[in-house]
Image (cartoon, rainbow over all chains, first blue to last red; front, side, top):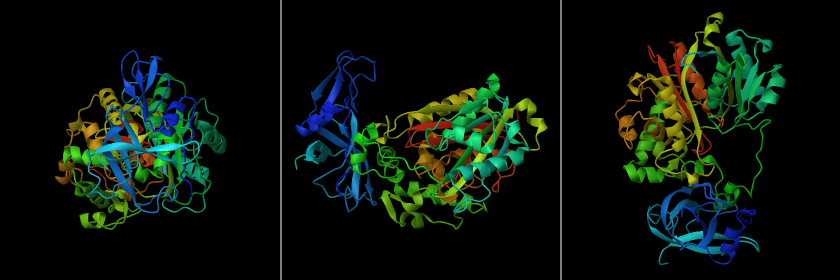
Length: 134
Length: 379
């Protein structure tokens, strides 16, 4: 069963194009320097429309998660973590943690992570995170 | 709105709760509405305002034979009905209408006539959360808890204790879904749903409904019921995405809503005799106690462990058994309101003797929205 995939909108296209290119793209306000997520064509802090897209470092830490024991069939047939990571640039995002046992012992809060990309379809590549150094 | 100027004069739940096979969603709304109208001694022609969520107020007004001069369809999740009380009180105080019916009905378990929300893969949630396997509140709403636990040294036993104590309250309530005593081990050893949350730390899924009728306090003496006054209220929203909650250890919507309600009411926390905190999952009372200001940050676990929220404690909490043991149709806020009203009328199955002030605090979505009402049985 294919994974339920996002449908990009004009306001988010740059983000999904970035994932296809192997880049995690964030947005930053030119006027107040605020970095934010999810994508939108204005700054949610100061309402400026002068915003720029830039390539994030891909570094993050594990902020919080659950291990879902009732996995959605399109995602996994085993319990897996649904996680929120804190990017080095500040914003947080939901993701899955890959290349790591899906156990409380292996998934330690604040552990360093690195983005990794997995192609899902011709249009969509999803960003996941793996333990740094793996 | 002047505190105490608006009163609840009708309140009722559906005739049955739990598993209801002979009513669809709109039928559950209607059953509760008819019971509330009987409670207040009113006919459809006596009501000129309608508020609801789940169904549209158009559907409810038409189905019940009401011609409204004011409607509210605010739908921000399970606390919508708590927010409706706030909006209705303001509307009545402003003279937009005189007598408001607020209804809730949900076939959460049997799914009869239930609205099936479609997937929205281009919404922000559809793009940035759905791909990672979120499927139900149990694996979204629970995500912040681990950060809270690490920050404040809370444990799974602290989560389990919430469920154990609420079962003690439920045992006194003949209408509660589950009444058998629970131990910490029962809760910890139950089926794992979304680690660290076991099934007994998650709310029930049941069928039911409830309705309230509000009018000006000056008219309250014309009704057969003991009036319950609204002395303070608050509301707020934060984010539709749990991953974008500003602080995983505290709900901004809770803080904003609670602070406004206490400011309006002009009461102190020590004056509060009874408290309802919408408990879709076991961590919510911890967040609620702290974000409403009853205890300091990180202190809720010790407050609960010391027995303050139990029967005979200083702050009786979720005295119907809550979403964990009483019932939870999906949008539980109406049942929290009903229990506050019963406590203020002095007719609750687990009545808090002499209670004069009750705080009812709800959540909508996954920490996405919040509503707070402070009730009193004295003006």
